[in-house]
Length: 376
Image 1 (spheres, helix red, strand yellow):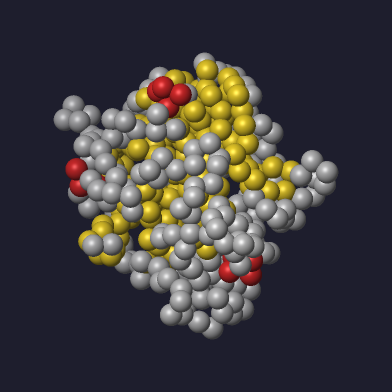
Image 2 (cartoon, helix red, strand yellow):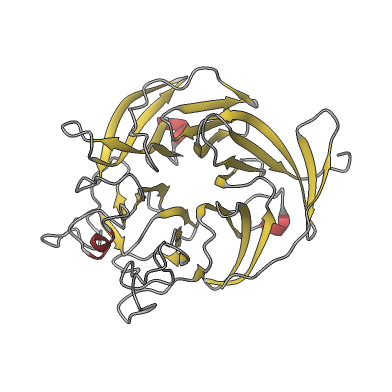
């Protein structure tokens, strides 16, 4: 259960500046609004300490260079289905990006023959200056959905160079999360070119989707792969029951057969919170915090965060630090809470933190969190 942290945040606004200095239980940082007027920003990828890519759910891939938002969006991005929770979502660089220039994007896409149906799509492309070239689709979720929610849409590279993709349950398709002949409520594992690894748990099982890595998920939007290869993910629960899990191949994570949450109406989804053939979360939250992204902090700028999980949350809106000990969460602290709903957190190469606020209609912001220097 979540530790209920009451904390005070003391902000000193610097004159004629968008920068502030804050302290939360000894965690000192300064915050700066780097970019405003973003349209529903969703994800950040850092090419360098001064060159960042930002997705807007409305369909644009934007480039930020030396703190300036480039006027024109990056060309060549496929059209996204922007409706409800759908749109252009994650952006991730290939581990060998400096050599191959590969960028990976997740998005929702409309079916060409029936615009009322849609699916989760992953594309790979080469970034050259301000354009994507050689764009190719490497994954499309099946079957098609009528709903416009719970896409998952998070992507991360594994230690062996393969990729994991979170595919949500589609909201109205939650029972399908327990079946292995579809992509609803699954983690998908592919090679970096979209081919299927031969050692996937269901690669040789007739009638099963060979891309499936794990199942029984709801809407997974936090994904971390450690240097040791441990896969950690969090997912949105319904009304309560957000989960943090250690993801292992072939395992069933229970949704919706077991859950610590209830439906939005208050109705019981399942009377069970555990089952011998289903995995228990490492941690769950009741009430919900709506976790939206996650990193394992590795930088030197904030020593007190080193090797800890940092989770961004939408409800009511904060960043949380989780300390691990042998795969068990031993403490949770709210370290940033003054910016409202946080859609994404990323670590810049210099160890500073980058936050995207969850706002539509060009009200989204990119905020940089960095250490307080002696002359600040």
